[in-house]
Length: 562
Image 1: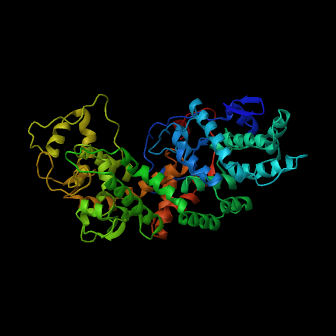
Image 2: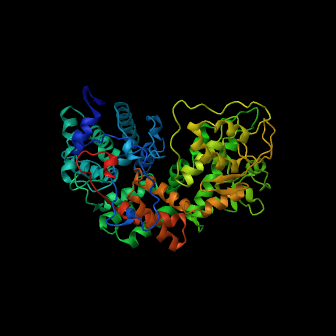
Image 3: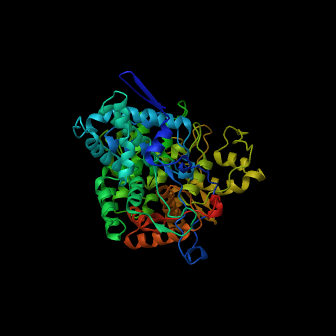
C-alpha cells in the first residue's frame, strides 16, 4: 500500500493496482514464474549435427523482473541514488547458476510492499532534482507533463505515449481536489512510474504471443538487453539515442556500442554479477574455515576476491584468448596474499599485477584462493566439490544429482588415512560410484592447495603425502595440477562452456538444444578475431538468439517449447 497524507486528506491505493492502472496494464500481464528443470541434453553439439541445421530458434524469454542488483544499479543511474534499497528486498532465486533467470524471478506480496516503500523513499529523496520546471499556478499540467515525459522515458527505457503521460497526470487534479499542491500530486505520479511493470520488468512484446515465428526486438528492447547484460542497469542516453535513431540493429553500431559499454566503468557489473556467480566467488562472503587449522581473516578474504575480479577484468578488456583463463602466467596480489601463496612480495598493500612464469602451479583460475576456498569444506578440502566445479563451470558436463539420503564422507578408519583413501571408501557405494568416478579424480589435481588455497605437500590433519594425480573423463591422465590445466585448456568443451554460460546470463534463460547452432557460430566468429572474452560477448550480442525473440504456442511448458 502507499498513502498520500497532506492537509487533512488521506488517500490510500494498492500499489500494484495503481501502477498497473497508470501503466495501462491489466493484472494478467504480470508473469507467472516457472522453475526450469535441468536441460535434457547439452547444447555443445559438434559442428554439422542436425541441431545446427535449418532456421535458428532464439528461444523463449519470460517477462524479466529486475533482480536486486539490477534494481539498485537502475535507481543509481536513474536517480543518482546509491543507498542500495534492494538490500531490504527478499533474496532472488537462481536458475541455471544465475540470479537473473527470468523464469524464477517471481513477484510476491512482500516484494511488492518493499517496492512501494522504496519508491516512496526514492521519490522523496530525489524530488528536488526531478523538479526541473516551475509550474504555472493556473495551469500546472504543462510542467508536470514535461517532468513525467522525461522521467518515464528513462525509467521505462522507451518512448512513452501521450495517453500514458495523461494517466500519470491524473494525480495532479486529484491532489488539487483534496486541497494538496503540485508537489504532492507529482510525487505520487513519480512513485507510480517506479511501481509500474514497465519499470520493474524488462518488457519485450510479441506481435502474436502464441506465434513461435522469431521476430527482431525493437531498438529499445535490444538496448535494454545490452545494458542489463553488460551493466546490470538501464541504458544510458547514448544507447537510447541509438535506439531512437533505429541504428542499433546494424552490425557496425552494435559493435561500437558493445565496445564502448565494455570500456565503461559500469561493466564492473559483468565482473561482479556474471563472473562472481559463474566462478562461485560470491560465496566468499560466507566462507568460514576452521580457525584452528587454517588461519584466515577478512583482509585475506578481500585480497582473494580482488585477485579474481582484477584477473577476470583483464580478460574482459585485454588481448588474451579466453582459453588462457586456465594457465595465464600472471595474477594480482598484495603483500598479504603473496605471503599466503608463497610468492615474492610486491612490496605494497595494493593489489599488483605479478608474473607467475616461475610459479606455474599458481597459473590461471585453478591456482586462485577464492575458487579453491569456496570449493572446500571448512575443515578439509573437497575433491568432490572441486571436481564438480570443473565439470559444471568449465566443461558444462555436470553429472546427475546425488541420490536421496546420500551420506557424507565417512570418518577415516586410520587417522593417518589420506583423502584419496577416504574417497575410495566413499566411492564403493554403487549409488555414488558412477558420479564420483567423474568428479573425484579431477579434484585430486587441486589437492596441493589446502582449504584456503595455500600450497601444501602434506595434508594438515592426517599428515598424508598429497597425491595430485588424477584423470579427466575419457581416460586423460595427469600427474598434477599443471597437467590438469593443460588438458582442460585443450578441451574444445572449455570455450563452448564459457560461451554457454555467457548466453544463459546474457539472455536470462536456461540453455536449449536449439542454442547449439548459436554457440558454434559465436565461437567460430570469435575465434577468427582472436578468441577473446570480448569477442565472445560481441558475437553473442550479434546472434539471433540475442537480437530476436518469439512467443510460445498455447500454454506449453518450457521443455515442450524446446
